Length: 244
Picture (spheres, rainbow, N blue to C red):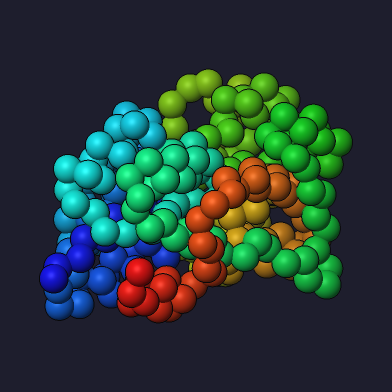
C-alpha cells in the first residue's frame, strides 16, 4: 500500500525529510511551500506552492489527495499554517507530526536581550546601537520599518515596502557560514543584531558574540497544542514508520 505524506515545508528539516521519504519504496511525498520567494529550493517528490485557503481548504486537499500523514516542518514562526494543520488534521482524522528544532541556547559571552515580539524589538534597538542587522526575515519588516537607525537587510528576493528609511539590502540564500557572517557584520559596522529565535546552529549569533555585539532575540509564538512533536528528521522518519 502506498502512503502519501504531506510535508509542510520551507525549512532545511523539511527538505531533508522529503529527500529521505522520496527514496523510500511505497511512499509518495508532497512538499507544500508558502511561495514567499520567487525561486524556492525544490526538494525531491511533488511540490506545491501557495496557500490552501485556510484550515478548511487544507482539509479538502488532504481528502482529495488521500494523504495518510501530515508533517508540519515549517518555520517556528509560521504560526498560522501550523494552526491550520492542527484543525485540518483533526477534521479529517489524519495523523499529524510537528518537527520543532530546539530554540537557541545562550553561550558564554552572548549579550542577548529577549523580547516577546517585533514591537518590543523596535522599541529596544535604538537604545543599543546605531547600525542594525535586521535578520528577522520578511515577516516582521513592516513592524520594524519605523526604526530610526541604519538597517542592514538580507533576503533571497528584494523585500517589499515598507522598509526602514535608512537601509541597505544584501541578496543571498542561506545557509551562511561563520566567515560569511563575520564579514557581513564587520563590513557594515553592525553594532546590534535583531533575530528570531528560530533555533538550530546560527553563525550570525556566533559572529555577534565574537564582536561583543548585542542581539535582540524575538521569542517564538506559542505552538498550537495537539500534535506529536519531535526535534529531528530522524525522529520524524521513525514516527512515520510506526503503524497507526
